[in-house]
Length: 418
Image (cartoon, rainbow, N blue to C red; front, side, top):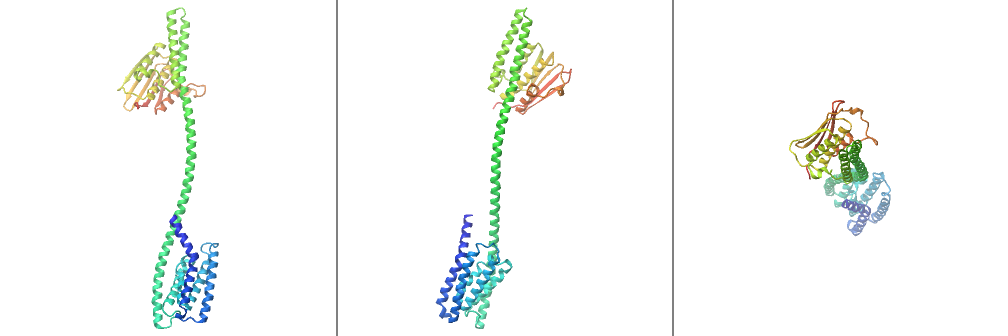
């Protein structure tokens, strides 16, 4: 673009100062050759008047063209008057052709397109007459032949360079249109970037709010799955201890269980706050932790329960193992608290790229459609299990009918430790 601007500046300087320079050169050459070409005194006076008119015309045009719109008829008037003055000056002295040749340079910008060839022909005739040897009109047959030959040469050259100029002008227009379109595109791109920056800021804010909400849901689910269940177990053991006050050894066992549940719940609460893995997974892998969890649950509630592992056991990412362990704990807690079950079974299946956890009981079941919406005062049972599974790209399905028991199935990707 800098090179294009330089060319435009040079063109502007030529159109502004070139005619004055060419006129001055023509006057100087004509003054030196006045005796050589035989200019009469009348022709010298006429040439002086025409030179003054040419200078005034150029001064007017230099001022007017900056105020006039492109394609104004004033440009055609200026071109015609200048060409007429140049032709007349060449009639007085052929060396004024140094001024008349200007008609070749700006005909495409001053005249309408349909008059460009006429302007070129007139300028070619002027130049041929001044170069044919005797001025205008030709004085002899030889001068006429020379005039015709030179005129033909000028016409051929003028039309050839006119076509080149037209192509160059078209190229300049296309370049200008391309630059304009690029500027519009850059403007649109800048607007899009500004909109993207605003959208990025909004997305960051939404992501932070979503992260806060997700952490709140995580803590709520952890509190429900650890503290709430632990407190419920402690209350049950304390009630059992109170009801067996006449049997101190049995009451002591219930109290010991209550104390153990309290210590376990306190540890799980601390781990939930710090987003650590459950205590059961620190010493064992998932099958071992589930086996202990099922055994402790069965002993605590007096319900027969079995645990089975199928497939090849593989190490799991902590988040996957914690998710399945919490789902198993919640499912067993629901079976003991709501289902009045007498038997329960937990199956952990390693199936290639997936791992499934199935918890079944023979309790009274329930109607899923009759469950209340999860809310501020509701539980985190089924909704919490589904939310946990979704965090690791898994799913939880529940199959149950009143009186026919309940089956909870969790399916998650088998993600190995990093």
